[in-house]
Amino acid sequence: MREIDNIMLASAYNEWIAAPHSQKSFTAQKWADTLSISLMTLYRRFKAFGFKPAQRKERAGKGIPRTPSLDQYARSLSHMYAFLPRGARRPPLRLVVEKALLNGILPPEAAEIHPATFARVLRQMQLLDEDGRVLRFEARRPMEQVQYDVSGSEYLYVHRIENGEPVLRIRGTKKYKNKDRYENMRLWYHGLVDDCSRYWLAKAFVSAGESSADALAFSKWAFSRKSDERIIFRGLPARIYMDNGPLARAQVTTEFFQRIGVEIKTHEPGSPEDTGKIEIKWKQLWTNFESLEFLMDPNWESREYTLSEITERLINYTVRLNRAMHPTRAATKEEIWLGVIQDGGVVDIDESAFDTAFHRSRRHVEADGTFSLDNTTYFVKGLYDSWVYVYEGIAGGQMIAEDIQTHRRYAVTPYSMPALDEIRTDNALPGKTARKEAREYKKTYRIQPFKGLYEKDAQVRDENVSVFPVRSREERQVENPLDITAYPSLAEARDEFFEIVGSSVSGDDWGDISRLIIENGLKRQFVVDLALEIRGEMERQTLSI
Image (cartoon, rainbow, N blue to C red; front, side, top):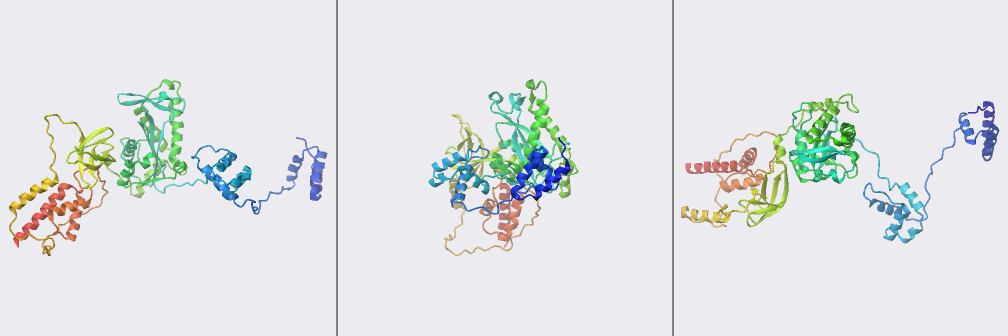
């Protein structure tokens, strides 16, 4: 660069400063020609002498628009853009204005306004800005909240099923092709990350889509004690945070987690950054696990892997990540998760509780005691011509039917047409049983005045009825909706109890008796035995008087 005499440059600067405002441009151009430099170079050299260009001042206020309804017109155009799904491409504003005029969203006089005017008002009012500041949050302690999500594999696809186990191959592109779909099956990753420690768990499943059964199987594995001692994560979290996908809306998962005392919280639609801790894990998995482990192989096109091999490598990958340092703390993710001990430990649950998860559907039992579900016919013994709720166990496949009116539960078996010589009997109808009992009662009834309905009731409670001592203890109980040996509620157990004993039990005594019934799991046999025992004690006391 050509050297410039500082003495001449100082003279130029002083003359330019002393020049009137109308002569400054002329003075600067004169000295630029004299020094054989450009005008911009001269201004840059002036900065070395302390010159600062005047900053452009913001407008103190905006003027009054000529069209009073201009802001309302712009808001109507923003509504047109809001009709588009999230992520869709935005058409040009001039075409949007034309369509709004055509459909009456804008009045005819709005056609006189230039689209650039609408664009300026939309910018000023920020009507098209949807991406605000991202809010970050983090749990204060381990197991306070876990983030859960499901993601499909980018490079692995199901090639065939061999001896009951899926065999997978690798494709070089992220997009699925027709040959990559074996009976529409895909490889899915179910994963969760602890919001405080960033401890991460993941497991691979093969299914046609995001399955509730796979979600429960993963939860059972994640929340239980593992045989692999390297995986220390276990116990129930206080809350599960997930997106608004099918798993969050599925009745199977929401009902089950509510029964075991785990809250499900979902973020707002269109804001995947809320579950960023689990979303970033999928990007790392596709790059650091799938791409590195399977694609970085000279013979990747001919390689085949079973699902168990994928699962084993995935566990080794997650164990390595969990032993790494936390991104913002001076400890590993495992060490931070072990801080759950300071909060009293984890909340364990019996693995058998996951077998009580069910899917409920409404069906009508026909006159022959059958109903159809998923193109299969089932038989309900002891029930006919009734609407029922069918509870189908997700894990074990157990199925029961609950009468919607009486809430009584019945066993369900697959239906098969009886042979010609086969006689199938069923329980007698309650009406016929009652008539038979009434005939027997008439034979043993002693002759005495039969009380009328409106006579004064002389029956009083016997004060000599003893109160049974009970013990109570607190524990988390998981109700099994597939159990037909227990009453669905305490109210139905109470009705059965008083039907046997009568109305001679006081409210205080019933409080103790109800606690006994609850402690024994509302079992039908216990309620009947207890009622008969109390009734016998009452009759013995009556005879001894």
